Image 1: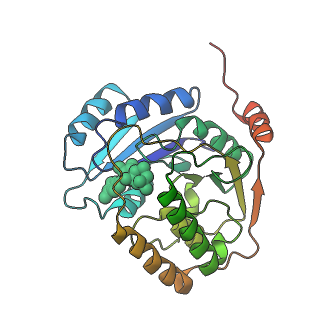
Image 2: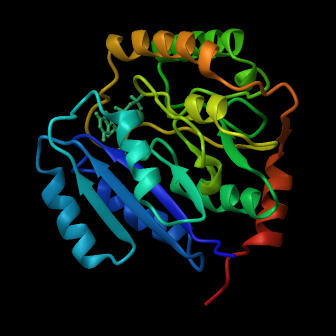
Length: 261
Ligand SMILES: Nc1nc2c(ncn2[C@@H]2O[C@H](COP(=O)(O)OP(=O)(O)O)[C@@H](O)[C@H]2O)c(=O)[nH]1
Ligand SMILES: [Mg+2]
């Protein structure tokens, strides 16, 4: 069975980040078969930067879409999931707020039998240090609302982030139709799975450029939750396991140790 990993990265005006991100992902996943799919809605020079990057890095692919800018994050990620060829799929932001080094421990969780691996800022060993007080408040409220609305989010410590990895075959038969940005919420509510593994990670400041979050995105999230209360599957029997930093390190050693050259 293939163990290939595809990382889907949505981009909107991330020219200053994509090359560094690709380099760090390749470094983090040395020895692991992987590719990186940039799904781009930019209206700046990002497509040219991506074109050059893909010409020199055989692990990189990009798909540029016209006319979806700033409304297209979730559709971009879904398009990337469908296009990519990995047996395991990950979603990661382009701005290096999600540290690429976390991909190897996430991959170890998948090889150990997880259906989904969700890194968390909110368990021992994690940190949301990159957020200012307003974003902390908004993010805390979004989590609370999600858990109140959906059984699939109830036992997940950090359900509203955009960083996760899962088995591609979970998409078969799943009707994903997200409004707005919260693609992981959609996957958690609409796919079938039984084991979720959480591992700790440290959230960082944006490397370059600006956040594109807006009030509209917040309103779309509320709309999405209301819709998922009707459409979402029941997940009361899902098992959620939390790995400590020490256990995570031991699982990396066991399943995908870094080979010394
Ligand atoms: N393809 C695509 N990507 C987007 C869009 N909006 C945001 N992104 C990307 O989604 C990720 C998260 O966006 P960001 O602005 O960093 O949000 P924040 O981290 O919540 O402040 C980044 O990689 C963005 O480039 C969009 O409309 N289309
Ligand atoms: Mg960001």
